[in-house]
Length: 285
Image 1: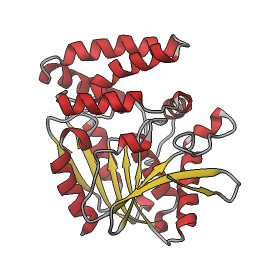
Image 2: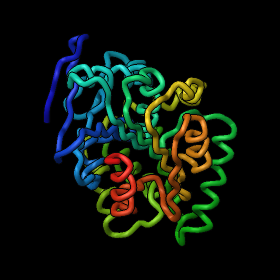
Image 3: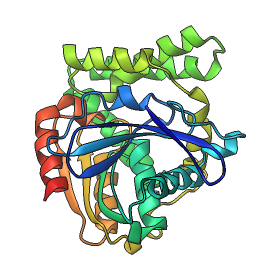
Image 4: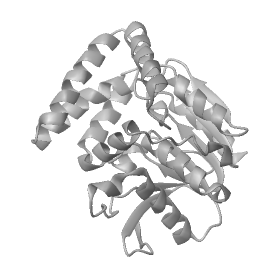
């Protein structure tokens, strides 16, 4: 793991792997272990920099919970660019990482060359919630045990919000994660087990959720984005509805939209080969 000091004397960290043009990969969560999150996400012919956002890896947490708001994550990406000494970044964001990548591209449009956004919300408004309810109905109707998984996840999420015991919370989180994939095969289950056993910062999610529900709208200035952009959505994502990802693509000038059928939140895990081919071609083109 590589660490560096920011202009405000904070420590940030990242991993690097592969050879070729640099792609900065921003993980979901927030608070999940970045290396585990992207362990299966290799892109041939590219150098992946797996960034550890604040409070993960060896990156310092903010001094107060307010530091987990979006502005802090955007600040960290800009600190990374300055550390690398490059004029522009190619960003790949998944889930909360996609929200961060979108926010950064809005704030610094001239400093993003290419942008890939996968299943990350830009805002949580009434249309989003309606689309989310419909997405969960699709999941329940399409996935053989989808209804049971959704019900168990709802119960487990309630436990997560009330327990103070770390083991109980982690066990509940593992149950919640079963709704993040449509095809829960051996490989997908193994990924979820590793992700839920890895280091985790539970403190980061609360401020993020409150900010989204409180009216954060990352599409207000999306027309300023100049990067070549690919937006990816999943038909059976129970966290970020595919209709919302289409809305993001429609809001960014010239953006391409790539839908994945029969897929949940973790495209990189459920359709690794197709994902690597299509996303890799976009990033290398």
